[in-house]
Length: 146
Image (cartoon, rainbow, N blue to C red; front, side):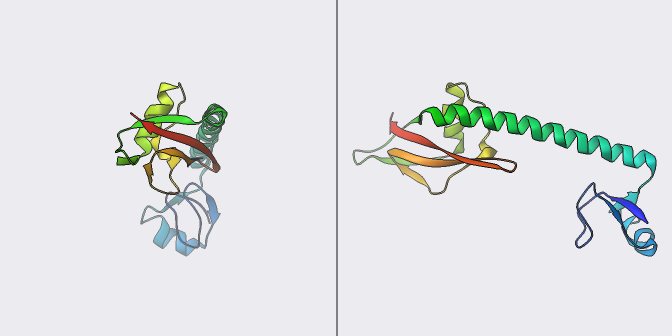
């Protein structure tokens, strides 16, 4: 029996996939527990719309990622932070600081896209990862005294 999975099911498939499972398994477990629904033409159209929306969102994410990386790779992103005489920061640089500095330059990124390979607690240049979906890249930030 063909069913559309409403949730990820171990060893069967991922959410919104159309899979073929034994009739008893579908009618006795998957459908009653709301893990799947029958693959009727109406339900298949709904899933087609979901897949189209995901593809459109992925294309938008890729466009935002490429634009951000083009702007960020041109020159290091300057972040002003409070520090002592030995150039150690009072507070580590976090993703909110990077987003704020990027927005000041007109670059649209979110804090979920940013990853730090190591904690940034000193002045100077540091590498930061930018991730969006399947896209990964890195750029440089320069931490200076505020």
